[in-house]
Every structure is written in structure tokens, then in C-alpha cells.
Length: 93
Image 1 (cartoon, rainbow, N blue to C red):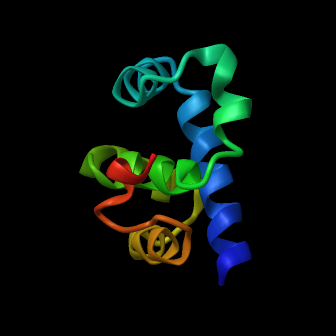
Image 2 (cartoon, rainbow, N blue to C red):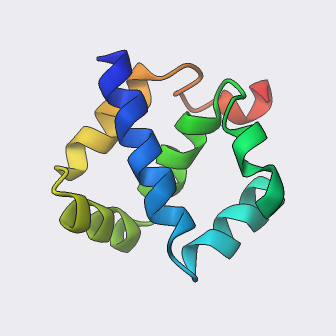
Image 3 (cartoon, rainbow, N blue to C red):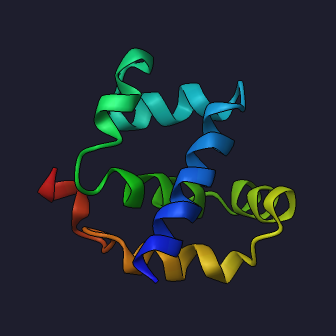
């Protein structure tokens, strides 16, 4: 399940990165600079943060689900399978 969760989170990151409206919002919320995404992606909790970003906005979640053929509930399930994929991950980074 962990590998599936990582794969889903990587797809979610690609979804965010390819969207001209979502990417700036994601960068602003996380404080990550665009050129630092690859490095940040290696940090524990980053992929969980991507999924939390998707889950935090229902229209974004539904669009991601539709465009990738992913059931919306699978995003929350994947989040819980990732390191720091709980509500206190922000304090851990």
C-alpha cells in the first residue's frame, strides 16, 4: 500500500505542477520555491503534504479524481499510508 500511496502522490504532484493556478497556490502555502520542488520532494512528509493540498479543496480533489481516474476516497487512504500523513505532519517538517 505504501508504494501505491507514493505513486498516487507523485501523480498528484504532477497534476498540481501542470496547473497554472494550482502550482503558485501550492508553492505559496508550502513556502517552497519552484526550483526547489525536486529537493523538497525527497523530504519526509512532502508527498503527504501534496495529498493534503489536494484534499483541502474539494473542487481540486474532484478534478484530480476525474482527470486521473482515481476514486476521491483513495486520496485520503493514500495520505494515511504515507510517512507523516496525519494531521500533525506540518509541525514535523
